[in-house]
Image (cartoon, rainbow, N blue to C red; front, side):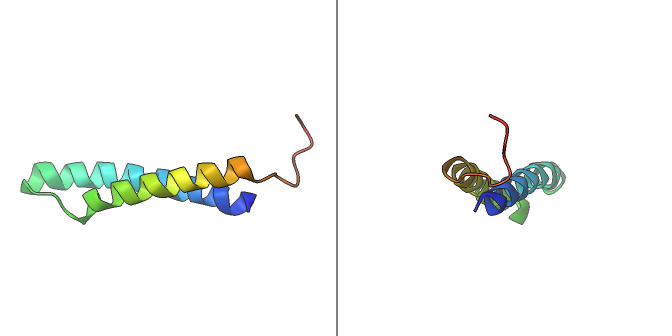
Length: 65
């Protein structure tokens, strides 16, 4: 569960950043939003779910506290 949460955090972060960059470029270039803008809320939701999953699960290999 912890590994899936970490992967969701990275996936959400990368998709949000890519959506912001390419969505802004398309918005400036063509003057209308594209599919890249729609990736931003989905990436943010994945980031939120990933953070929640990592907070509510215990990492099996974490010995330091």
